[in-house]
Amino acid sequence: MTIKECYALIGADYEGVVARLCGEARVQKFIPKFVDDPTYADLIKGFDEQNWELAFRAAHTMKGICANFGFTKLQTSSSDLCEMLRPGVYNEAAPAQLEIVKADYAATIDALSKID
Amino acid sequence: MDFEKRYRILLVDDSELNRSILSDILGEEFEIIEACDGLEAVSYLEQHSAEVSIMLLDMVMPTMDGMAVLDVMNKKHWIDDVPVVVISADHQPENVEKAYRLGATDFIFRPFDSYIVYRRVVNTIMLYSKQKRLEELVTDQVYERSKNNRMLISVLSHIVEFRNGESGAHCLNINTITEKLLTTLIAKTNAYNISRADIPIICTASSLHDIGKIAIPETILNKPGRLTDEEFAIMKTHSMEGAKMLNAVPLGGEEPLIKRAYEIARWHHERFDGRGYPDGLTGDRIPIAAQVVSIADVYDALTSERCYKAAYSHEKALEMIMNGECGQFNPLLLECLQEIAPSLKEDLGKETALFEQTNKDLKNITSELFSNPDLAGSNRSLQLLESEREKFRFFWDKTNEVFFEYYAESSVLSFSHGAAYLVDGGSMIVDPLKPGFFDDRLNAIVALELDKAMSLTSYEYTDFKSEVEWNGAMFRIEGKTVWDFDDDEPVLTSLYGRAYRAEKVGADIYDN
Image (tube, rainbow over all chains, first blue to last red; front, side, top):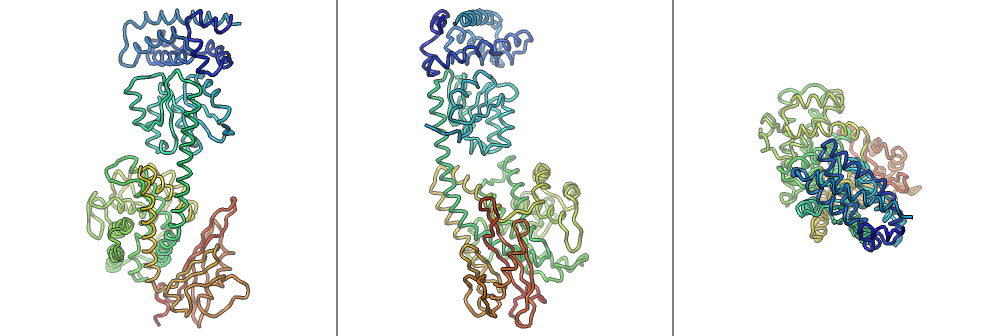
């Protein structure tokens, strides 16, 4: 599967990322880094340990990274989660929102693994 | 564009992935230093703030976040020299506003466009380096004009010191301590209404704190034992005498330098609890410049050897000041003294050359100048310096002692007017070091001594003394050489000093 096909599969913004990173070469270079990035693990750890500061920071980082990569769905769900975790405004809907993020993340990683 | 990595970017982001993308965009043309949180960034700036051309700063980070970094950069004044571009996914207006208020130059939102990041970094760096070049230009001009003033002030304060049997380092030490105390003080409070531009003025004025001692008889000044009550009463008049002299400077009252020098000369022996002299002022009724210089004076007096006492250690001196053994001081200033204590011990050990001091002052002056949106201010500052120069010419002309200064570049040796009158000839000798040069006027004798003085001094040891016979009397010549660096090699740029009759130190040499 090409990067373009992979992006189409998860409804991500391929034209956007190529324009922002000035070419597919850079997209290709950084996608493996996204797969290995510790931010998702930090988010899960934050919830497991009820360390809401860590969870907020991870959600915030995730939102920023996804915005750059054009992973629209994961960006939206992690951005919503981030707002629920913003210091001082913890929201009881956060665990449910985390499940959505988990699903979007799994779908993204799965699609990225299919790139040749 | 090709910047050949001439500029350094400090990249602060806790996400390795984000750092590597930005490094990829900018790394080819710029040198990149990565910091993974605010604490790392601050500790890097602590050592290298002058080498950083721009900082890219993430907001949400562990340990120390972006706002806290901006806070520290304000406190330490790094924000004046290092432009900060914030890169954040946080679009909340209050956070954006706060970052701008704390001095951020620009804001880039995620997702960012690589080309725009690149352009903004380039533009910001170019803008700042253009400003730096301008700043250097003005600094050079101001430096040229003020160098001579500083030298004349230094000549004056040296007269007082030599007569007083103090080492030539006393004024320089007081300068250094005063500067450190004031810098620390204005970081703590705005209560005293002192700006960074006031600091060099107060430091320069501090050199004149003991000028009134010219009016005190030598026998009292240099008496080895304890002073009698009567003698001490005479000694105490030096603060008021100094104030009177400064007050007599024509039109001086309006000039900040003379105004500060007056405050310092008159009140540097006042104490916070009112038990000082001459006026017994209490608390902050003592002008802050005088309060600061009085602490600097006491510290330096304690740690120096005098004709009536040995030198105390840095630690002992500090303890004595803190315990109130030298009178009560402003508690806030004592706090500042504690903070600068470690650096004092280090810095006062080494000889500070005059030009280094001047350079430091100028950096203050110009940075203040440029933080002022109105660049026309620069002209005004130059005029101010010019009028100071006039004033020191006045002192120079009025004194009857033989002062001289020699500039290596022009090879001109000039004398104070009193001396020129005495020695029957112009106040200038061109090329005094020419082989075979000889005549029997005193200024010529001095000229002959220059050769010796130059070979005896070095960048580390700038003071010289010698004795010569002239018209059947012994004359002592003492002075100081000033050095600059050319390709890291110290080069003698100028020399100044005075000559006086050995039997009657400090008196007019032609009054009998």
